[in-house]
Image (cartoon, rainbow over all chains, first blue to last red; front, side, top):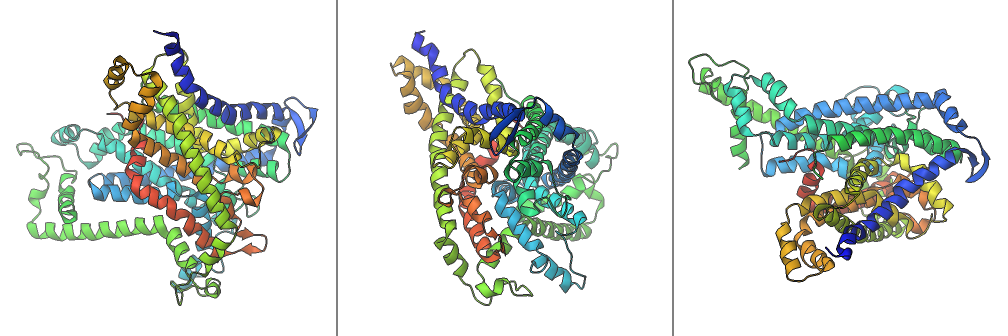
Amino acid sequence: MKKSDKMFPYLLLAPSALVILFVLIAPLGYSVYCSLYQCTYMRFTKFVGLDNFIKVLTNSDYLKAFGRTFYISAVSLVIALVLAVMFALWINKYSGIVAYAIQLLVLIPWVTSQVVGTLLWKWIFSEDLGVLNYLVKQVGLAPLKVLSDPKTAVGVLIFVMTWRIIGYAMVQILAGLKSIPKSVEEAAIIDGAGKWQLLRFVRLPMIKTPLLISTIILTLSNINNLTVPLSLTGGGPGTATNVITISVYRLGFENYQFGTSSALSIVLFVVTLALSIGYVKAVKYEV
Amino acid sequence: MKSDQIRISGGVPGKDSGRLPVPGNVPGKDSGQARVSGETLKKWKKWLRVYEIILFAFVLVVNLAPFLWGLLTSLKPVREVLSYPPKLFGSQVSGEHYAEVFKGTFFTGFLNSLLYSGIAIVVGLLLAVMAAYAMSRFRFHGKKMFFILILSGIPLSIGSAAMVVPNYTFFSSLGMTNQWYTLPIIYIAYNLPMAIWVIMGGLESVPVEIDEAAKIDGAGNWRILFGIVVPLSLPSMASAALYIFLGAWNEYVVSSVLVSSASLYPIQVSIYNYMGFYGIQWGPLCAAATAAVIPTLVVFAILGRMLISGLTAGAVKD
């Protein structure tokens, strides 16, 4: 083999590696550096060591925000997965154009812009002019204050987040169901498996990987979601929907405290990284 | 065709009736059905069909509700948007809101995003096809490490909130915020891991023998890649282009902090800006939102099958 041949793969990879290094990895390194300083308006004033981390991890506001984030993400994930499994089982018996059309339809919220989806939901939920309250009044009920009541605001946030992710989970699970060999299902039926037994002992075990991948990707996507809470409620009313990403955003771009917001970003990144590692382990591949 | 499938599905309650087969019977799909008279079965099928249509309509409405309501709002005359009670349709179809947003900053954002996505697709595909080719055809040191980097980059780019502050502080320390190239670089990097992954999947179906034959004929490495392999992997490149487009077109948060001149705003920021200081301008916002979603839906309708197979690659392996 010529020497140029040996270098060729590195040459091919170099541009991609540089871009990923420059936009994804170097900024994280820089954030670690920022997080060790007191930093306001991008001016590094004092080296403070791990103080920023201690500050954010002992601050009850941020801990509560983390708690809220996990709660909202988990509820949204569980609802999405249960409905996605039900949908997928339903769609599974169709094939061809019908199944394809339904998949396209449920994926629309996932592929369209989060800003657009969220703001248009906000318009529907709008308290004085929204179509929801109009319908509620037509039925004869008192108009709802969905976005200004802390309890329902959380519900609406969970609803919009779930609405966005459900199609992704359904498409993953459906692909898993379709990949189960017909002979396996038939064998189970011949052996006397009923509807629930078929689901419990044949289908669910066979769609373990798509379920796991959906869980990881969607948890990650929910925990890291800033666009939806920011455009829907902005964290309010009060702190009802103040998830951790809202805290990071406000700390950085409203209070210009880039030391502490970097520290908080790093904490969020560690959670993200743990989930990413889970994803790498779950995905089926060969190198 | 449709009615055919529904007829087949009508057999499902029998198949899934949950009864264990009676010993001695030939247990088959229809073992449960034998006890149901033809009349009842017909009724049952009819109800099942009605139930399925209702369920389907419900899914349709919930999935599309915001877009449909946004579309209807955007076509109303200006004074009717804020009138109460809201009418399902305006008294007349009006293009006022569209005229307004296409005269204003939204149109700049629209054009900017076309340009940003275009750059991201061209450069992103070039980088991705090179990297994917290296990963699928060569053995070299550090391959596994790079592979893990790509794979872990996929979920990272899906959720970008952890990257907002790092990207902002790093880019502004280098003076790279608020430039024409700022957002294309971001979009390329965020979507590169997925693009590489998708094209790698596509290269699996391009036989290695073709490369080898070309090599024997004396073609150089670069010629093999761009003259032979790239034309054969166009479907997976189209799929990768779709991912880059969706990522670039839909990104909001990082874009909103990395550029601050109105002339550089991407489309999502220009939509968001209709949530003004003096209240939300719902009419123009709905028009802008509808106009922004249409290109996504067109591309998605054409390339949807590829998107789905790219999405599920890794979850199922034949």
